Length: 131
Image 1 (cartoon, rainbow, N blue to C red):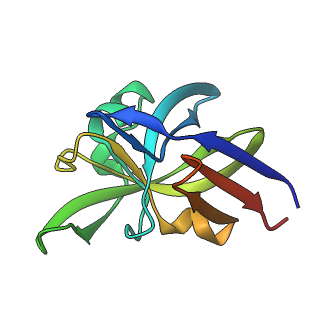
Image 2: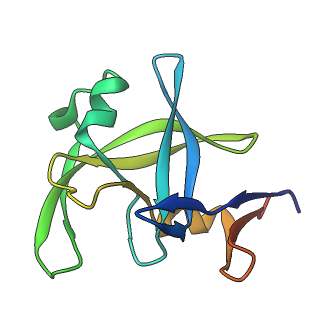
Image 3: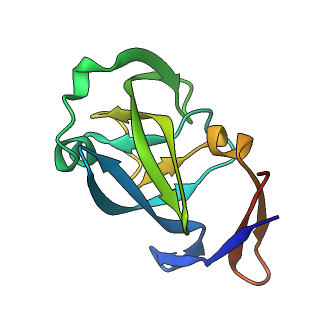
C-alpha cells in the first residue's frame, strides 16, 4: 500500500489536520489547504477557490449540505483533478460561498480512496491508498 503523511499545521494556536492539496482545472494546478474532516460528507471548498480555478460556481450540480449547527448551505459540485502527495485523480468537490468555517474541508468522500489515520499524539495524519 502506498502512503503519505502530513504533519498537522498550526491554526489559531492549535495543531490540526490541515494539509496542502493540489486542485486542477483547465490544465493548471493550484495548491490550497484543507482541513481533513471525518464528519463532513462532501469535500467543500470556499467559492474563492472556485474563482482561482476559473470555475463557474453555479454551473455545478446544486445540493444542500448540513453544517455543524444543523442548518443547510448550498454547495455546487464540480469534478476537478486533485493531488494528495504524488497521487493524482479526479473527484467531485463542492464549492460554496456560505462555507464560513475559515478553512476548506476535505471530507469523507476521500475516505473511499484512502485509509485515513489521525495520529494526534504524533500530530500527523496518514493517507494509505487502497490501490
